[in-house]
Image (tube, rainbow, N blue to C red; front, top):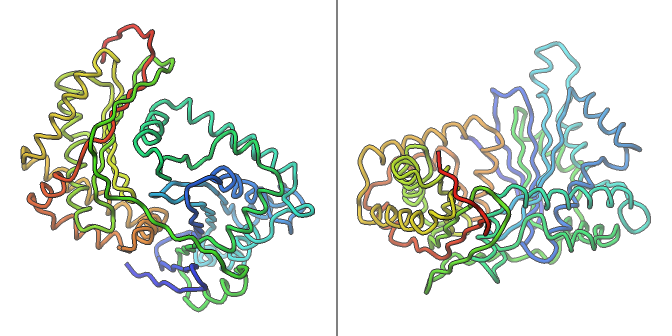
Length: 431
């Protein structure tokens, strides 16, 4: 895969990924910020900016402009990658080549870059802050997001596991912030954090499409005018963490199906060569429908409604989560840890290893055809100081042998067992 990177300023990188087979042009801008006390502010900022820049007097006129660009789509959001909060701006439009082929007036790259720059650099303000009505509306929306997370008990249980497992680590913080922080936001405090974001955050700009490097560089230099760069944060993520004793946490919630989560320290991040054997170990354990936990814990023993495992490759954490009946809590934990230990002792069948390797390679092939996934793969490499293309990752996975998987598996240690259950729940059979 072809890709070029240009350093625009201190901590600001432009990544161009040429793709001739796409009918769209994709622009993604990521701001990196440390997880900490201002997560709520940083989560609200992109939503305020998404309401439209100052050149458009109303949100209706801004949406009209997007429609005139053949239905251009602007989306913003926040993500948690390791101990960073990633603030994302995403703009996708029909490619100029495709419009020319259709005999339509094309939307050139300069116009697309200009619109994205207006969204980021020209917000609607009033005095020394953002417009109050916009801020209040987005504060309400953000509080709703936080509350909805609590309603999604499967993901909320994982959040609670991480909060206990990584207590006193930035990774324990929610990417959405807390209700208390969001309620405290003012137009002035939000604008102050916005200015810090522009001047201090490392920034990665991804552009995927078909045009010349010169055309892209010219448009970016013309429209993306960042303030003087200062106080750029130094990101350090604690990956190596010894587990002296496994913690057990039980929390009460009014739910019919209990949520079990096991948090493991892997001591391995994406920057480590063992990450690829670890990906295969995780896949054999619980990454797919053919995996050991699904076959043994769910199908053979009927102890759970669902069970899966996943990696946080930028933090060195693996999470197994399952939906169970609380009466089966101890049996399920025992069986999960037993199966994990069997894999660590080389009880890995050739068939399940081959199926896992093929599933991971298939997933990487799908990434190659997905512009968003390509950007996120490169971004994970940037965060871990190890940029790799999907093709390079595919080659690494293909060459992993059994011995390397076992070496990675020996590093995995159970840190925390968490269950969310209703203290008054009656037993209901698993189907």
